[in-house]
Length: 158
Image 1 (cartoon, helix red, strand yellow):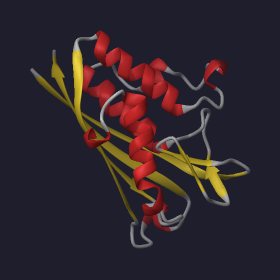
Image 2 (tube, helix red, strand yellow; image 1 turned 30 degrees about the horizontal axis):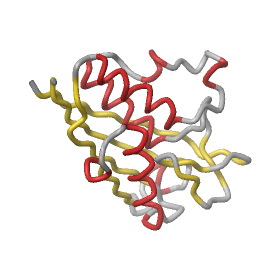
Image 3 (cartoon, helix red, strand yellow; image 1 turned 60 degrees about the horizontal axis):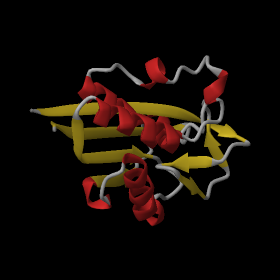
């Protein structure tokens, strides 16, 4: 049996925070606002995996009202979600992610993000795709108010 999951997340920019995407610290004057490290890419991927499992979303597992997750490393949380995937009897076959950011330029970090995410998932990097795009200056991403990310995953019952 195969299962498909889709995840989406968005975070606004915030001053005085590092920018972390896909577990990689990105050179930027601003980071993203959030209870954890606000890694919008890891969050979208976690939601895709949890959706495929029919387990809800990351807010259910890691509520932003819980001080234990304050400034949490989202890739550590992703590892916990990956462990849940295995506990539920599934294997992660493939994941593909897209980040929408007008700035900063993300292509120099793409391979590092793939490596970090695949490591957190416990899969080969060939099973994790990461692409980046802009919104041609349209919407909140285009106005550089924040970053959005989408992810899809394919699981197989083992």
